[in-house]
Length: 114
Length: 115
Image (cartoon, rainbow over all chains, first blue to last red; front, side):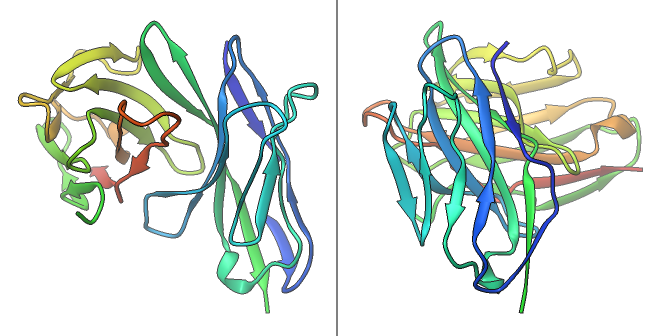
C-alpha cells in the first residue's frame, strides 16, 4: 500500500550544522509531497511542498526536491538554528476514488543545541 | 480568519464516557479531514468530508466513532464509550477544492486522555 518512510530520530545537531532528514515513499499514483513541522503542543504547519517530479520546494532555508526515480523527498537545510527544534513529518497526498488523502511518516525529532 | 480552530484543546475523560470534539475549518474550505496522532507517530487518517458529505472513513474508525458536518461548515467527532486506547491527539484539517494543488491546513488538535 501507499506509505512514507522517514529516518528515525532524534537527530541532534549543533547550531549552524547542515541538516538532512531522509524521506522515501511508496505510492500507486502520482502523489504530491509535503513536509510539515510540529512544535511542542501544536498542530502541524506546512513547511514546503512539491507537486511533480523534479520540483523543489523551499521555505525558511529548508529545501526538498521531488525525486521520482528514487521515490524520495529528503529535507535539507544548510545552517540550522535552535528555533528549528521540532518534529518534522514527510507526507504524500494522493487522489483515490475522488478523495484526497494524506499519508504521513512517523516523524523525525530534531534537536538543535546552542 | 485565523485558520482551523479546534475545541477543546484538552479533554480528560473517564473510560466509558462519551466525548465530542468540534472543528471549525477555514471558512472558504470545502474539504475537511480528521486525523488521529498517538505519541511518537505520524497522523493517521480517520475520515474525510467534501462539503457535508462524508466520502471516506478509515477502518480505524470503529463503530464507536462518528463524525458529522451537517451544514458543510464545522464538524464534530464523537467517541462513545471511550477506551484507554482512544487516548491520542485528534487533528482536524481543511483544504479547498477550488484551488489547484492547495495543501491541507491543520488545527492545533484536541488532546484526549482517557483515564
